[in-house]
Length: 364
Image 1 (cartoon, one colour):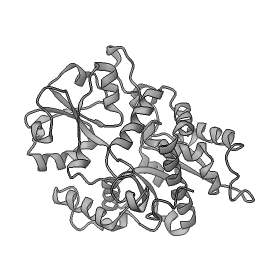
Image 2 (image 1 turned 90 degrees about the vertical axis):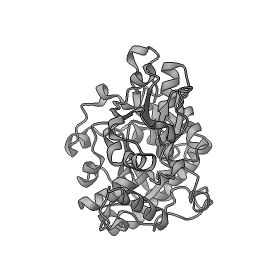
Image 3 (image 1 turned 60 degrees about the vertical axis):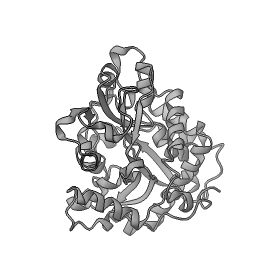
């Protein structure tokens, strides 16, 4: 994600509404228009990658839907394509970018995609709504969603947010905002609308806005010439898993070997990306031509700095780790805030059968 340098067009490229706003939410058009760049790149890199373990049989073709336009936050999946890791696991994977008008759940339920990136709170909400999907791995142990403030204005902690105007997206209303309100005594009258444009924030030092710590701070620096104060909710009790891998319940039940191979290969892709992101970044820039090397480097640096991927249970159980205790914490925290009825069978939202193999199992 980069931002144009002229102040008049302070629009985040990873949220390019004008360019991608016409993407349909229906499964038919998106299936027809699905991104093929990653498959092309996969074929181009297959000569230099190690021979697939299942070379004697046809590869299983699957599609992964991402949560947004291609960026460092998706790097491990692109790396698994670029380095032939998916092919080594008998998979021919197409990565299909998400965007502001893309309904990932609709695509998954409509069988236009086979796996998607998600987050734990939505997975539990899906159970409440009766959607048959399951989380099979959690790549981000910490949610990189945070709040940004101007330096030197007295907003250096969450306790300083009272009375401040806070720009929030629609999805924030059912995810982190109820958590912040309850924990820090904030008020709905403080809310403003965040349109994924950092311009208003840069222009008004009294504003606070939401943002991924891996993305918006870079855009703010490019546009306004300053580093914002970053308040990361994950370091203050917000327990959400993000960049999870979700699939339909029927796939878990009927083809667990396929799920296991996809999860293993994806996790290996993330270990590889953290060591040398160049192959994955090349494909990210192919899918998202406006992505810059500077933004990619910044995103990866922050993923590492804040332990987004390798902290918590991932330190011993490996990238992608999940635990019953953590899911219970997520459910209890949010249900206590009224996000879910206590009767929701939250354990149906996930399975641990495909993860927690240890830190060395995926690094061969």
